[in-house]
Structure formats: structure tokens, C-alpha cells
Image 1 (cartoon, helix red, strand yellow):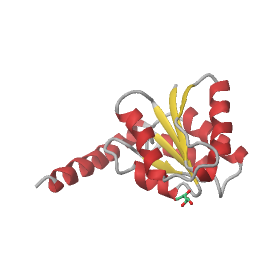
Image 2 (cartoon, helix red, strand yellow; image 1 turned 90 degrees about the vertical axis):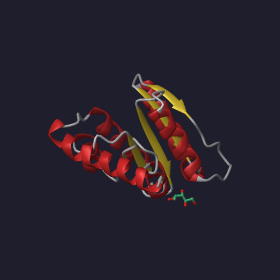
Image 3 (cartoon, helix red, strand yellow; image 1 turned 90 degrees about the horizontal axis):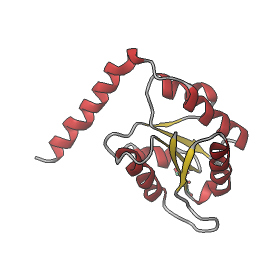
Image 4 (cartoon, helix red, strand yellow; image 1 turned 120 degrees about the vertical axis):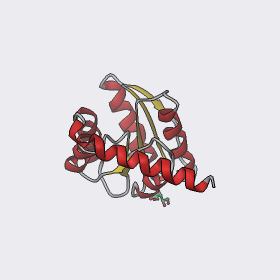
Length: 152
Ligand code: RB5
């Protein structure tokens, strides 16, 4: 799978470790930063990863900040993105099975490296359950309707 990954300054080493693990598992990984020791703004990195997905350059994305909250808020502003903030293997698997999340958001200051890796694996290996598609269609309709409202 083609996976784009990024973090802000709160989780650089955790993200680098995760990127290596994903490569070792056979994925094609685009690590988009940030660099160690530089304070950055999470929306810039959420946008980079989300753009790769909506442009078709990546299949999935992983975003890590201190809590995962900022990354999930920012990524979900981009049409076509379903970013899920998860804290454990159960929510990670359900983000795939029920929500077909195309970005997983994680908190590097609230989760350890083992839990982070287990969450990503659970999300990548759990299939989407098609019985939930009509709900995702409604989410897409919300996105579309609100975009046209703004355009008025
Ligand atoms: C950065 O200090 C911190 O606010 C960020 O990593 C993240 O936790 C925001 O949601």
C-alpha cells in the first residue's frame, strides 16, 4: 500500500519509527516530515498528507501530533478525507470497518510506540464492511451540500 505519513514536532521520532516499521512490512511510505528539532504547525502537515490521498498519490495517510486532535480536525476539512482519531486497537479497527477512514490520526504524547504501531496495523488489516457505505454516502453529501452553501 502507498502510505503518506507526517507529524508535527510533538512526535517526530515516533513517526520516523512508524515509517520504518511500515516500510519493513512492505508498504511504500512517503514520509513528509516534520524534521527533528523544528517547531511546526500541524495543519500544514495534515494538508500535505490529505492532498496526496485526494490527488491519488497515496492510498492511506497517518498523522501524528501531540494528541492527534489537531491533525484530525485539520485533515477533515479537506473534501474526500475521512480522518479518524483513535486511541486503541479497537477504535483503529472500527475506523476501517465502519468508517473506511483514509487517514489515521494518533496522539504521540498520549500513546506509546507499541500501541501506535498496533493501531496502524489493526487499521490497515481490517476490511471495510460495505453495509456501512450508505452512511459514508451521507457524510459525502454533507460535505457536498455545505461546500455549495459556502459558494452562494
Ligand atoms: C503542539 O504543541 C500540539 O498542540 C499539537 O501537537 C497537537 O497536540 C494539537 O492538537
